[in-house]
Image (spheres, rainbow, N blue to C red):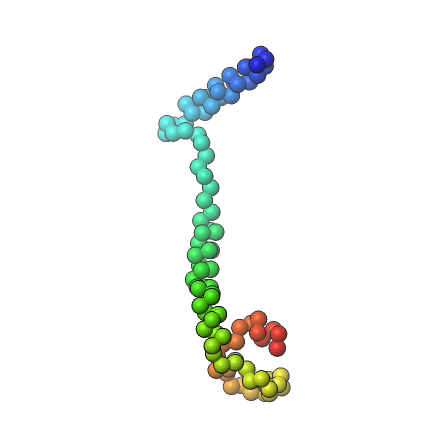
Length: 95
């Protein structure tokens, strides 16, 4: 090792010792690992919304169709009667 490398290593170690001595609580200056609590909460809330998607999809396949196969756009707009089952937005968009 050359002389400059030894000097730089010495200054780094003395700087870290200085920082540790400056900590009033006596702990080390190592930063704690960042935990994104917002992301954790979001994922938990999302799981509550989606639940177990596979079992729900299998149940929906066994049900009757949500719209009659011969329903027209005009017949649906002309009625204020609610649908017997909830129709997801994705199905309504492709109407």
